[in-house]
Length: 442
View 1 (tube, helix red, strand yellow):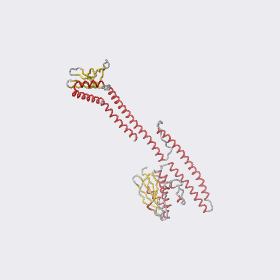
View 2: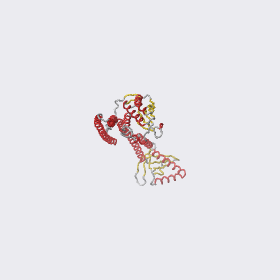
View 3: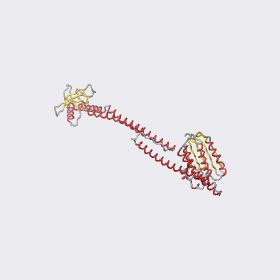
View 4: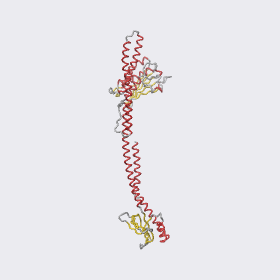
């Protein structure tokens, strides 16, 4: 866009220069000289009409004697007798323009006779012949220089305009390529992608080199963190399972169950970490196929109906027929985690509504509850791993459920948002709506 704007400004400059080139080509300066000669001739004719030949002769003599005089004058009578002037003889140049003459100039201070080609005119009045001329050689040179300079400037500006379009296209193409690769990295999580570098003379190539180095550093750090977390999860999961097997043989049933619950909780944490890591880093879509989302949502609701009935929670379901290219198991997990949280934090005799609807290019899954909600300052934090709002720390859980939901939603190029459910505002229970938006075209 900037290249086009700059080229447009240069085009205006070319038109501006072309205007003066046309003026120069039109011999404007020469025409102004002819106008000056005509004005001078009219002035001398009026002087003759008022003061006669003597006044006219005296005026011509005084004019050519002036050091600032740039006119060539010769006044003759009807017999071609010289009366006054600084021109000995003149002859019209038939081969050239009608207003150009070859003259012999008489210099009173020397005996030399100089021949010149000048622009002039001959005026006949009352039996007298008056020749008036001016040397336009310098003007013609100036005109030629002006004309040549104008065309040269137009050529330069034209080349600059073409070069700016080429450079603009080159820069925009390179920037779009960098942007596309960065977008692809964000969408796929593939930090191994690199920006191609096909030259090393421009600033964009230097920027690409720096960005590639940054991606290499990020890739090394991410792989390092992932390797550490994966190794910890894998290394600890086996001893925990062995510990659980040993606890099965524990004699005290009460203590045994408490210890088994703690071990199960640790195992679920490691399983959740590995699951999130797998989704975020692999970004695999091999299991994607066309699925009926309404069927998935109904299966989730059927799974949690009994839990809602135990707390006397009313489930309000509004599910539309929707199809989507997706991973069925992952979306089932995401929907289940959202509904599980809603039922968990909704008090007895509360209400939870589940909505599935479709728009033109988006599918919306929304779960609203009449629970305590989430404070505004925590809404952006609850999808982080192990993050829990202070009021929820007394409930069961490990803070990985919403992190897993976010990873699944990102894999489907969707969006997860939390808003207050003002429809079910009851005292201190503001209520919360968790909304998942997924584009229909992936």
